[in-house]
Length: 105
Image 1 (cartoon, rainbow, N blue to C red):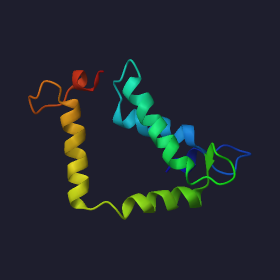
Image 2: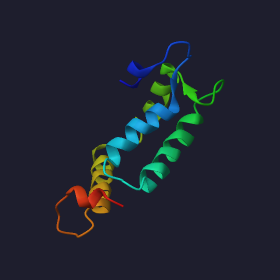
Image 3: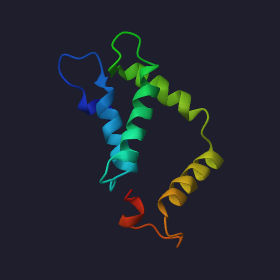
Image 4: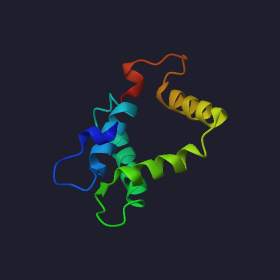
C-alpha cells in the first residue's frame, strides 16, 4: 500500500512518508504534535536499519522484510495486548470509551 506513494526518480519510498501516514493513523487528533513526533521518529529509526544505500528511502523488498520481521513476533495475544495498550493510553478519563478528547495531548 505504501508504495503507491513512491516518487519518480527514487529507488524506494521516503521513510518520512511512511512515518507520516502511520503516525496520523495512531494520533489523528494530536494537535500539539508531541506524541505524533515521537512516534514518527521511532518509525523512521526502525525503518532506517533496513536501508543500506539511501538512508531516507526504503525499497519495497526491504519494506516487506521489515514487516515480515514484525509479523513473526505478532500473534493474537500480542495484537490484543497492543490494542488494549493503545486504548488505555487514549482513554484518559478511564470511562472505557474513546472520543476525540482522549486523543488530544
